[in-house]
Amino acid sequence: MSKARCILWLEPTQATTLKRVLERADIELIGAGSPDSARIGQVASDLGCEPVDDLRHALASADTDLILLGSPARFADQAQDADLDGLKAAHARNVCVATLEPTPATVNGIGGTSFAEVLQTGALNELAHMMPMTRHTPMIDELCTVFETFAPIRSCAITIGMPNALGSLGARLFDAMDLIRSLIGIPDIIEAGYISPAAGRGLHPLPGQSLRDLHGEFTLNLRFSDGRCSTLFLTDQVGASMIRMTLMSTEGHIIANNDGFKWFNPVGEMIDSYNAPQANDADPTEIVLANQLIELCSGVGPKRAPIDYPSVLSMTHATLLSTRTGQGESPRAVEHLLLSM
Image: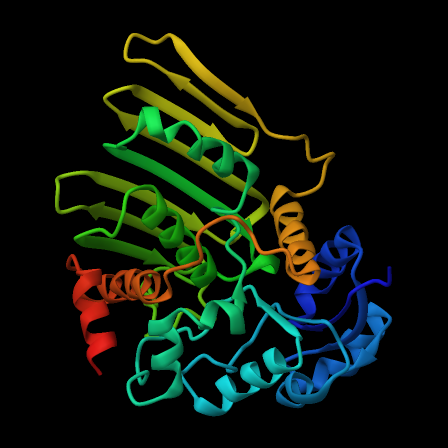
C-alpha cells in the first residue's frame, strides 16, 4: 500500500516539528509553502521537498492526499467565500485538509457568506478538519468511560500548554473550549484575562477579534447556569506539551495529566486509575496529531463526536471579548449574534 502524500503550509519555525509528525504517521511530504512568501524556497529546501507558492492553487489542483495547514495566516481568517471555495475544491477531489488553527478564526462577517451555511449544518468539519489536541487523547477517551459513574462534574481546573509549533494560543483556546463543552457544557459566563509575551511595564496588548497570531497566556473563570464552575490556564509558551486536570463531583475527585488519571472517592480511597501509553520521549501531542492524520488519510473517521463549531467558536470569542471589556461575557449571546446574521 502506497504512502499518503502531504503538502504542508507552515511557518519556518514549525518545520522540524511537523516533519517529525509526518514521519511518525508514515506520510510522505511532497511539498511545502509558507505565508511568508520570501521564505518558501528556504522552507522547502530545509524539508527536502518541492516549493508550493500558492495555497489556493494547491487546494484546487495539487496532486496530493493531504494538505496540512500549520499556519493558515490570513487564509480563512475571515469568512471569505473564496477561501471556502478552495476547501470545497479540495474536498471534491478527495484531498483531506487538516488545520492546526480554527477556520474561520473570527465570528465577524460570517452572515451572508457560504461559511454561515457550513457552520450551521456541520459540513465545515468535513471541509477543514480542525485537529483537537486534547479531546482526542487516549487519556480523555479512557476518562470518558468512568463518567457514567463519576459525572456530573461539579467543578474543574484545567491547564493546557503546548509548544507554539503545534498551534497558536488561539488554537489552544479553541481546543480548551471544545474540551469544556464535552465535559460540562456551554458556560453561561466567561471571565478572561490575557497576557502577551511582549507585555512589559506600560505595555499590555489585548487580543483583537481573531484567534490568529495570538501568543502568551489566558486565564479563564467559567460559570454555568446551574451553578457549576471551572477555571482554565492556557499557554503556547512551553517547550513540551502538558495537560493537567482536577475534576470534582459527589463521587470524589479525579486528577489527570499526560500520564493518565486517578479517581479517589470522598474519603480518599482510589476507585480507578489509568496509565497512558508511554511516549518514549516524544511529545505526547505530536503523537496525538500523528494518529489523527493517520485516521484522516485512511478514511477511518474518529468515533468521537465532531466539533460543534458554532458553539465552540462563540465560546472562544466571548473569551476574547471579556479580555477587552474586563467583564464577564456570554457565549450564547455571541452565538445568537453569529447565527442570526
